[in-house]
Length: 271
Image (spheres, rainbow, N blue to C red):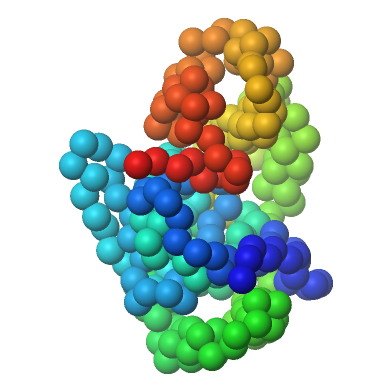
């Protein structure tokens, strides 16, 4: 039992950031809020035959999906059911990685889950059955990596997109999308369309999400936080701008985030 995460070997590492395996006792809390990340993900539930997410409102309505789904990238936090998060595996894709597996443009994956069986049929069922029959976590990760390698194509991201991803990732706090577009030699329309197709969101939204995540990484382990300084260092106009971005991406204020945080940065225990 435990949590294991590995980086795949080349050439798969160009498309996949990491594979992980979670095999832990049930959590004491019922729900968790999961923060958005820039890449799409594959989730395989080995404990139940479905995955569940909940709407972020007073009703907290349940949305059910198959046990193995490809979803995201998401632009807002999601609420999940910890009762099903006992034995789960996952894949975190790099930009373009999910398209290499599904053939779908990243933009079509935004904020929706696609059942793995809907794409691969019996091959997806066979994968989950092999994972269920493999008791060792590292062996399961090996099974998953080999399956991905056999089913993924190896497309190259457009050089204009690679350039923009590098520049934005290096310093999202000061990213200027207009100057990036001029550097590519493409029109605003062509660059925006290409970036959304290969990354799943527009370049401005991508930079905003990376800037938000940089703040989360900065404050997650802090005892006390000077939010005015964090806002200034993070490239926000003022503290109210930072609060707006927290509400947009995390569904809560920075103060509420600090009160709710747990041991895992992307997962916030709820009731």
